[in-house]
Image (cartoon, rainbow, N blue to C red; front, side, top):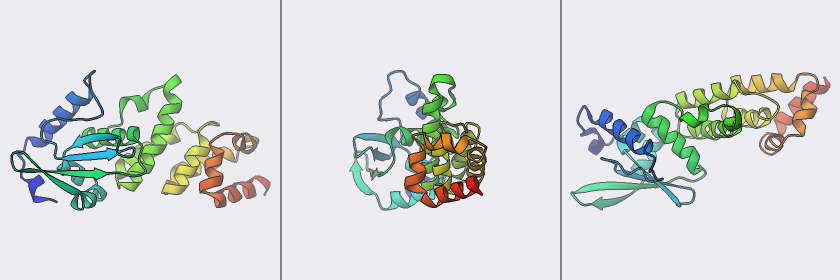
Length: 216
């Protein structure tokens, strides 16, 4: 861990969390979470969106972030401090925002727990967040997303969830999706969904396995 991030008071994590919640729960919040003590700016979406965060927390939660922060560009700021700048590729802004929420609060964003008309968006977010959690070695977040997706396996979600499960080694989710697709009549219906294209693109071998099971 970085020495400059270790030199914080015992109450600093709690103060940082309170500041984060106050900022992100404000009705006037913006994409820049500029709250007290941040020393890292993370750019996502091709650099169009920026989030300020506490480097010590990112490094403590994720070894991948710790390595990226070590290599990050540095900028001297007034008062003798240093701010690091990190640009993330391949992560949507809304997915990173959800991941940042988890890293500070140890919980999924409230909107991911929504029902009815928000269900489809919540599943899509969980699929993207699972991939990000796997990339940044946030194992508990990965399991939380996998559990959420397991509870929402249906005709509309199964193909997309199966593709994500296969790509990121989620064996429980994969088994549940395969079992669902293998039920009589389900494979043909799933093949007509938009999510099935993800299977053909990302896991052609999995498609072969499903067809072999269907016609065995």
